[in-house]
Length: 132
Image (cartoon, rainbow, N blue to C red; front, top):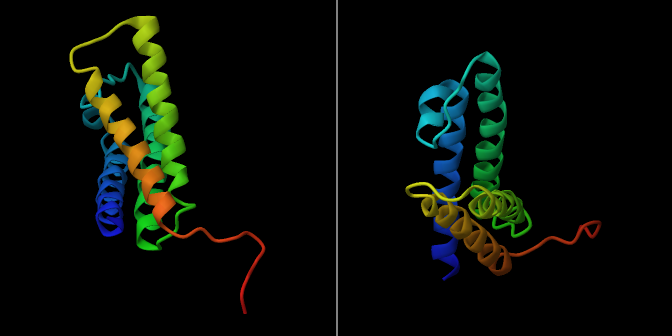
């Protein structure tokens, strides 16, 4: 079970990291795949900065947490994607739905569950307690 969770976290981390790189290099096409359409240079800058940061930080934390067998690092993507899921849930109630609205919510919820389960199965390091 631990191997499967670690492998899924590693694969997810790599996918999200490449998505972040896509937003950095080609924000128009990467944004269009998620329903984001830039309206000028300011929105392109926001997409390059914010979406790149979200996906690269989340992806690298997933990948390195799995690779290093570090349960603490896996709490970072759990928090990021949990907040994203919460934002979509608020939008669901405040704004209504759109075709396929549930798909990104399913991905975000899956990442949260995967990250938390993997974090519980992998070791945590105590802060300030180094062994020599």
